[in-house]
Length: 388
Image 1 (tube, rainbow, N blue to C red):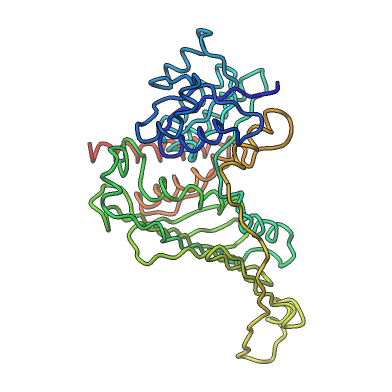
Image 2 (tube, rainbow, N blue to C red):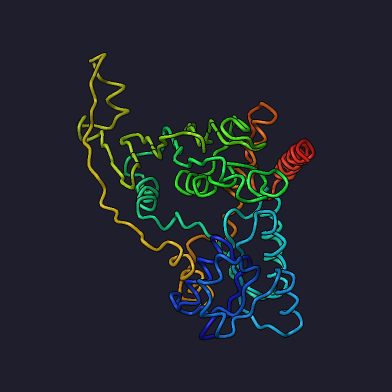
């Protein structure tokens, strides 16, 4: 296969970016064959491809029907539709032996992500399933992951991520009928703005064992879903953390800290600063803590800034890695199976907040996972009924 024939499902804000990159020849190995639901404001961006015969379908169902009838020949699809539709469209793509690149999140609830994986596992043809976790291409986050996994500074003690630079005025929520709704969007800040943060959190630090969540619905905006989230996190090895997000704070910050045994990592403003402790103390921090005769030591450590650089075209990198994986030239930035973990986190935070209790995150394939899925979905249904 020299070129992968691609259809982009949902040409809105994000879908138009993906379609344009492919149509303009920016992704080696991908050729745009079809799109669905081209919103008028994005039509001009694709006018050249449309004039050249790009096929346009009114819906994902129409596109898949064309594939199934033999009218349209595709090798892959990019799913860029509202969250609830991701499961149905990814599964149908697999049923037609099509590779899938799915925009975040994999769904609204973790059972949807699991069903996508099960549909993929049931196919004889080896298919690529990848997620648009474009923040993983950011060199700063990649370097944080490298440092943590290297063990150079020991294991994680504490994690803190305060990301409140998601500020949105009321018009943001009224500009689309599906935004800030339980039945169409599936949630608020946590599911709409934070999937990348939650993915990076578990990608760099591992999946927490349990969470206690506090979601404030309509605190700053006249909406039924949350616009402020605070979550307390615990890992199985004893590490603790906190995650805070909001669309109602001005000015907001985006500060990600990881406290290791012998260093502090601080990511803020696109920069990664590291404070090393062992060198300043002349020994490991634990040894100093156990043996120091000074009851009030001032430990400042040695600070330096990591040279990480920037990734200017994260979406191009995501699409190129998808193409490379299909053509056996490399791996995608994020395999689709990893989409389940950020949903575990968001679902657990919601469930904890609704029930006012600590929630254990499940192990994939366990009986606890089935109970977790059922509990979250019942809670979501209650929210939908409440605001219907």
